[in-house]
Image (cartoon, rainbow, N blue to C red; front, side, top):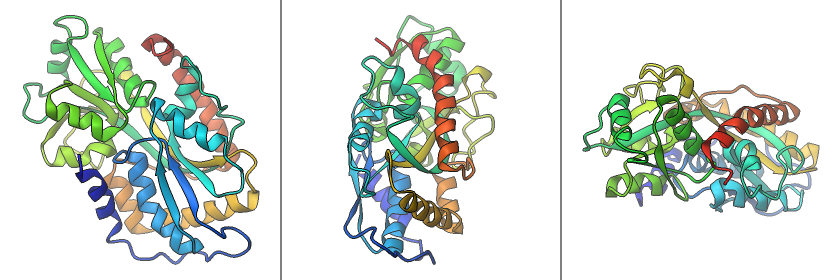
Length: 324
């Protein structure tokens, strides 16, 4: 799927240089690395590729995106947890590594409450259930009927074991009373390609990563796991509309760094990113990739939010069998 990086690049082209604060003081004096613990093409990737050039203009140094996929995002997340807290290694991550992976077996070698300095919240996005655009499944009733033929008759791809897409698919299966066969991939692009090649029946993954496929009719969205329809995919019904109110779920995205980062660096990043995300064109792009605002919580509030989400997802992980 070569079009994913091109899609991300196309999001950047219309953006004018924002009037943001210029860098002062000792940081940054060299390039800053932003680790994305997923393969290119997913929502995390789209968000960071949208904002990185704006960060470069604001701070006067390159902000280099380093994709480190693996273990549902835990590999790249652990890499940042072990990095020096000097502001030169940052992390764009989401629900999976912080609120799900701690309950998997084996558990990751980081602590979501102690290993990170939380910086800012980008927003949240529901999960999309999608199938091939030219296949026979047209709605969630068809999907359930196909899955009911026999256990694991329907396979679904996600961005990895323990990802929110994986768990959202299992949550729906529990509510529907069927069994699905999970096929983990390294990222959204691989999961979508598996549908197009016919190697999997469906995918459950963050909606923003698959907007292009839906608009191009190569894949068909059956439902989104939100209470209301998503602006980027207005024709895709919600799980509530499809008759599965217990399957509402969201994936959230944030920026963090290693624990004990300088409060001054955290504040400067928060201030710059708040200004960037207030830009009309950035708001438009966020809507276009399926993100909704979760407000502007302070770093301590973000840590509390992560803890609350972890408590919510823990029983889902146990029921999904992802703990091994």
